[in-house]
Image 1 (cartoon, one colour):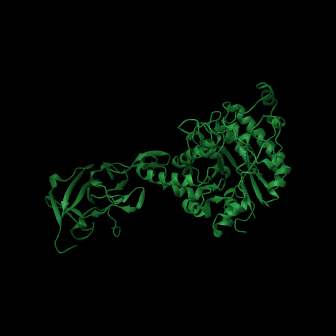
Image 2 (cartoon, rainbow over the protein chains, first blue to last red):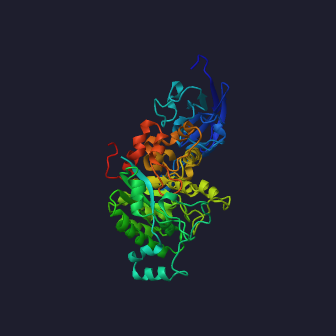
Image 3 (spheres, each protein chain N blue to C red):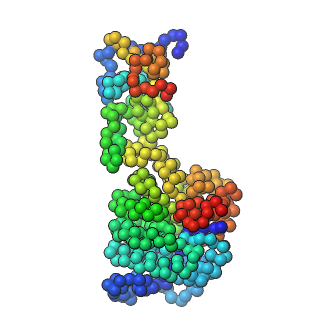
Length: 139
Length: 361
């Protein structure tokens, strides 16, 4: 982090509901704020594949298998890139079909009546209260 | 050591199989048509002959696509000349049993052919191993035939022609995949009988006019089966399954795999049973026969074009003897880097077909 803290704040009441995104400007960077299973996540609005505006993609539920059955995975847990339709897990940023590829994640947390988004990695600084789904060392 | 994974043998006429049929089938075969049952054949003819001219006497009669080559000729012109350690025998006309509409008759013809092949070729020549012919249009009967004779050491796999009504990954074929998986037998998908019988059209563009067009496009059915098998998760559901792509060239598979790997990333949700990138299944489960090896003017271009297929692990020598586009072994191997050659000459085939030769001797 630079000395100048780059962050955006939005009123809690304007935070995105499950299954949608709220795109905010953080120090000139477009960042998408998501809510999945009650937890807040933030992703860069840039697909790591070809640079598409990832956060304009549809928030969706992954189709998975359970033995021979098709089942739905966690509700609203992925964002599908609008250009090439690659799917990214919102919590981890990982591409479902190419786990080596990750969308950049940022720190986001609730601070009183506001949601705070910064360009820090999740789990750093004030982001320690961000998603419990974040795994240390995956940034 | 040399393993040839594509040698064709055939009967002189369908009547050769009569002693291997039950009485009712024999009656039907003898009584069919004008002078007995005949198989449908290609609408195109090779302008100067389907077979090498040095392996048969060109008769005056205009009667058949597939001239008979005897076991003695096979020995003298191929097995002995090239010191073939083991040769895997694929069908000629018997491949048509999979594309005739009468699936009941097809299954009986397949059984007769397999018994004939066993007795007349495989038990006569210890250097030969057989590919079972099965009625692909009747998967339950195909599975029964695999279980009937597939456990014999003389048979090392199951042959499926490129021409088919439905691509081979489709669930209608699950009984067949279950059977080959159970017996640990590989499947060879081999170009044959596209646009013939119930086999689908060789191209969506329509039917080509010339033999040379057909022969250039003949892998089209195989490419469809290849993509179908990968997208239906056959290798997830039947993990001991191995598939060889025989006589469809090499370079087209590179392009299709690149496209499929890319498309899978976007369409993963449609086929979530495919847990891995399609090409990763290929490295573990699919092998490619060398003939017809593409021959650009600059041989280096061939190597660059096929490197993605990991030929050192996936390529198996095939001659296609006695057909006109036969590839001579040393000529094939010379075009490949020295460090690939033993794997292509015998190692990859020995592992794939689980042959009684060392893969690293």
